[in-house]
Length: 409
Image (tube, rainbow, N blue to C red; front, top):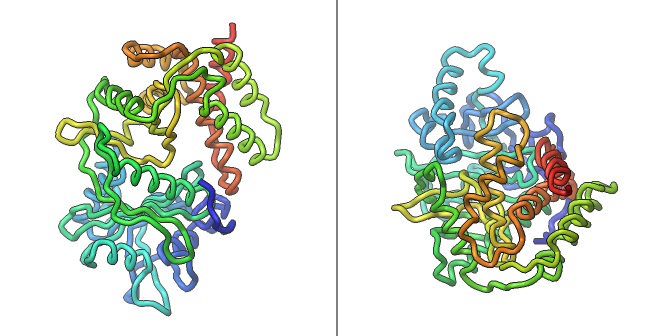
């Protein structure tokens, strides 16, 4: 997942909040100069958007065509309960103004040199059409905080998504997902996945992946169908049975912990303690290793005509312990469905036990799977430091320490 890109990191959080608008301008301008995102409606605008987010910290750019607000919002926030309120908030902001403009106002992309924005040129070439509007989602301050662009037709049909890298970490994630999707296209995997329309580089060598949209229905409450599907995928091909401490996954995990510690330029006793505890208690246990999605959550899966579909394969591992995705899913559910700001590892354990009871070749315990899943997330946040993305981890490190304390007795 290495990248030959430099350290410009235009889409990352290293720029600070005061420069994020210029960062957005560069994304729209294909990471080349001469493009500016300015407040207000301008006659010479190449693109116009409603910008949502705090000042200089945008989260969404939505089309100014109000009839497209709901499909664009749902396209980015499928299944989220608050998604339907965003179009109403945008309309109120445009109508009332005043304090609402702090969080939503109209912006224009302008340039003195070009008649089309590079991102429109890219999507037009892929789609073989230009009758669409563009929307963008930003994830500043997150360890996988790449930009996602959407092309949406004038009648509200989502035409494609484009994931755009901006520095070594996010470009590596984009190119890795492209590789994974290509690999899956060559086999008949037991799951629906996005179809690639284009993958490669654009403009200044930044990685981009364009895929067809998948119209998902949310998972049912128990999500058992998703867990069955990920088990089927894990054991689909290229599986190995090995002791945890002698597995390729364990060697890779140790290497990534070392890289994460280097990224933050300090010792981190928690990650090393977690490795030592897991190795001592479960290192000699054998289990099945196979494909892992890596970010298995309700937001990244759903149903298409009753069949499970999976999105966002950028964190996919080709050899990981059977059940690791279930632990990750349960941790994510605990975060999104709890009123608490912390992860309750006892509640997570109960959920994992429900979902792994029918798993085969499981000598490592559910506690081990949860520790591994939490450690994976801590590594993810720490490793963001390689691109100087100031990703704040307010939950996973605390939960990992809590789980180690509980299960080391």
